[in-house]
Image 1: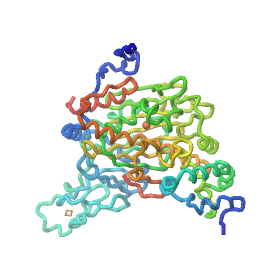
Image 2: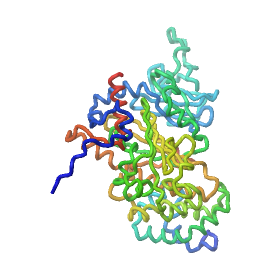
Image 3: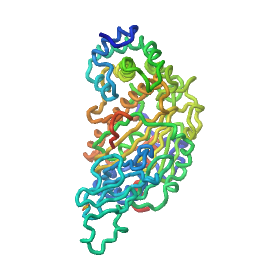
Image 4: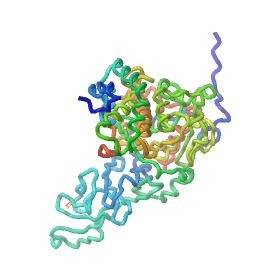
Length: 407
Length: 116
Ligand code: FES
Ligand SMILES: [Fe+2]
């Protein structure tokens, strides 16, 4: 039997060829298993990047606050809407002797009182009341407010940065402009899934930034909506890389026949996730800001805003993923599903169909993560070969490596 | 004695069997706690009756579904939740490559406190 000729060339006119600086070599897996590398990422990436910590409607009223323990920043963060409606973030650390000021995870407050000696801070972080103040020496209350963390908003998304080198708008750059027309304000979250997974944060992001895996991992659950006769491996219809951020468009299969429950959902509410708009997949159904390639067989977009925010946009829904590294091999993740608020009972039922599908498919994705991490630790592979369809995976390692090296 | 409207008395047994739970988490856990024959039987009946159920409950505004019809709405929601078990997996849970469901927290807007 003749051995098949090894494929050494690969697609010469593919997506990867548009970004020659990334090369085509296999990528080292060291960045996913080395604790020292993780510490470098903490200092050079996470402590200097804009990180998404929720949306402004999570804090609808003045005094509304949430407290987030952010392990990768080695701090606890208070995010609060002030009396002046401005959303601010502070280290949740008392300026007296460093006690944690706010113990509750969320709530509404007029100010924050430390439970140790009773120092009290305003919603703007200023130190107000110090019990028995006269006993202190040269205490400058104006300089003893809660330590602020830079906070900026983009399209309702709250971002924080412990050491910003540029403002959020410049940090987002073109991906921000591209997504700007999307009507985020017309959507509201209905359900959030959260997990704590024993894998590196980059392996986690990788699982959701290529469509190569749908034909195998999701062969039963989410293959036919995307891959069909014309595009049997669900090749992306579009890819774009920027300095830090990246996106791709996942194809729709115009021949896809929805399941009976899905057909009911469409009958009751119009769009359902993974289902083509009426009359088959149609670029006309892609919301403003999505499907930049204007491909006729469009299903959804995956946009990665480096390092911790990933947005998936379909017709009538979007998903918001947030990644929070805890250690080199542990990451917390939340996925929130957003839809236009249902106007009728029928639309409410329609959404339940899509939520169940998303949840089940995501659990297939989650399964690979810990298996990958634990086996990478074996050292049995040192590099991973990446296809043209995995360009976003390749990009992530290049971006991280550049930042870790301080370039 | 049934609380359901007269024409839906035949669905009463599903309410008794726990298929009309009020939250997403409970509906999902109900699915995971059942064997396929029971899920399949519920699916077959509901697929047939769904248009009637939805048509009926849909006469009310979303925020004003009467108490006695709320279980009817929950049955329809449960149908959507269990559909992948029948249509995709042929098993109550995701098959082959599942991630232990107890490790995933489901938070429903307006029902649960937001966790992070
Ligand atoms: S540590 Fe907060 S008041 Fe003393
Ligand atoms: Fe997937």
